[in-house]
Length: 154
Image 1 (cartoon, rainbow, N blue to C red):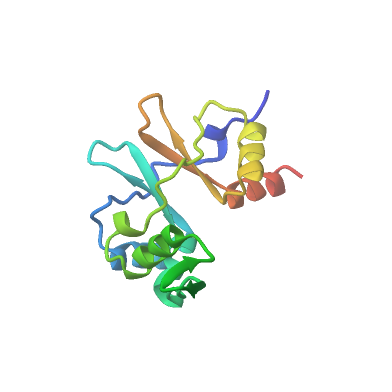
Image 2: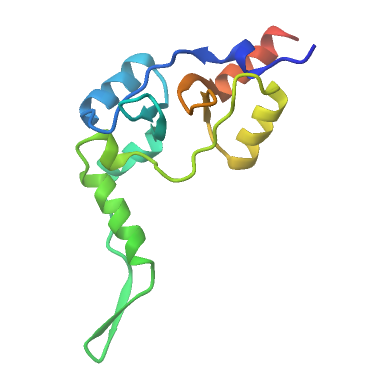
C-alpha cells in the first residue's frame, strides 16, 4: 500500500489571515520553530503563504535598482516593478503586505507521498499546503515531515 500525504502531514496547521500583524506571524514562526504559514481568507480558503524568505526583506532592506541616465532619461537596468515589490515587503506591517500570493503549489491529502515529494522537488518549495476540494487548508506537508518519515522506515 502506498503512503499518502494524509499519512504524514500535520493536520489542522496554524494559519494566519492577511490582516494578521507581521509581528504576530514572526512570533508564531519563532516560537513554533517553523519556516512558513499558510495564509487564508475569512472563509478558510488558501490565498498565499508567508515564509522566512518573505520576512528577510524586513531585516535586509532593499537596494535601489541599477540605472543609467541618458539625456535626462532614466533607464533601469533591472525591472523596477521587482524593486517596488521588494520595497513593499520590506515596509509591510501585515501578513497580506508581505506574503507570497503567486501560484502556490498545493496537494490534496489523498495524493501519494511520492508525488508530493516530487512536486516539492520540482518547484523547490519547503512546504506544501494540503487542501480539500474547496481549497480549504486541512494540513501542511514539509520537507522535514518527509525526512522524518524516511528515517522511521529505514
